[in-house]
Length: 70
Length: 550
Image 1 (cartoon, chains in turn blue, brown):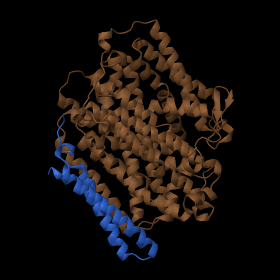
Image 2 (cartoon, rainbow over the protein chains, first blue to last red):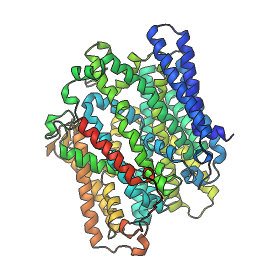
Image 3 (spheres, one colour):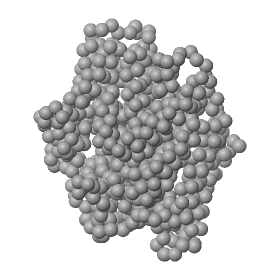
Image 4 (cartoon, helix red, strand yellow):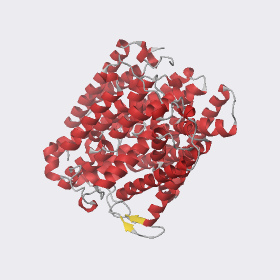
């Protein structure tokens, strides 16, 4: 439960899903330009999403959204 | 603009996430402090991004792209002159008083420093301003969705308002702030590919230089006279009006943005919040202004990039971003771009509603209607205020639809109130002799001076409702000049009235006034944790940008 309250994790999951959607769509859509744009954006979004997820596992709890007030 | 299933899917996933964040945070909300102030527990990176995201509303994203096309690179003054310096000043000099005084809002600081009437004046005008701004944001969103996607006006209004209501009602300020961070990344990553594709099609920066009027590709050239630059502003109006009065008035006193720093975990992080936020802020012109310049270059290549005309027959600059999205984005990434636009509207609306909540509950309800009630009572008031704030926003959106000029008038009146505010705070924090009576009458007279100046001057057919003593080259120039006149009047009246009225005892002003507050020293602090050094780095970068794009 704590992990899904970590904003880095939430943002990471969001961009990973959107990135993968764009990648899958680029494989099924027609038009070279459209495919290329969606493919590159999909890769960048998914990479950013994975980076945020990894970050949420690496940093200490102090940086998490789940931390209580000081 | 036709959306396909993939685009709707992306919009749907975004809605699911923003509402989901509200549900996830619901269990953390137990007191009014949790709901309205996030219990001062938010990490630095989140407060910093939320700080600029609260400002990254519809007016910013659509409006700055529009100004980019209308005024060119001069629009970057809103960032490199009208933001960075004020944000650094807020972090280094003003935040210690906001945060250190334990005030829960900017109006409450005015109560501690001056008196109840000054706080109430600021609280009422601010509450009205935020809730109406929220409504205007909602109206603009619905109009945009109607024009570019053919969505029904009513459905757009109720759906957007409903989603903002769910996540702010459930998770309070924390939910709004977390969503602002998600929205920040979405806006940046959703629009950045548009800038890349536009630049590529325009032939890179060289293509822009070759095809766009040189007068629109400078920051300071032609500033010797208002007639010599597309913005119609001279250097004095720009530096004193925008760079000093308006910028410091907004970034240093507007609770909507200051609130994001006030929920930090400690004073050092509260100080660093606006300074760290200044870094993405000074890079933001690449995302929000450059599209406006790019479209000017693309218009020389193809008529497909021509903007629709307004009723006056002028180009509708507000359509710059939608036009670029339509022409450059295929389905898929188009869904991301549209979602980014929706996110900017919702971000602006939620920011206004949460600031309205806090000020209404603490500065009006608790102060004037029911003192000393239980925590649970104020939590319920805060939640009820969220619903009321959203309902007023919806009503405002419908009023704006029928009477557009009334909304223009309201926005204008609010700008009169904002213009002199920085003089009040500046004197209050740095001159211990300033009194409550001085602050109150300074604010009232500064607001009146702003209104009278507008009534005596004309720009683009607006103003001059008393007499036309002077005509400005542009509405922007008029606004900058009204701002500095209001500031000077407020400053002078505050000083004069303060000198003839009795000030507070020094003991009452410790922690509220610069000269009476012990300076904090932390020898173990590293340079990147020191607000002063961070601020200097930000200012050096800002000055370099001003020189490069002179």
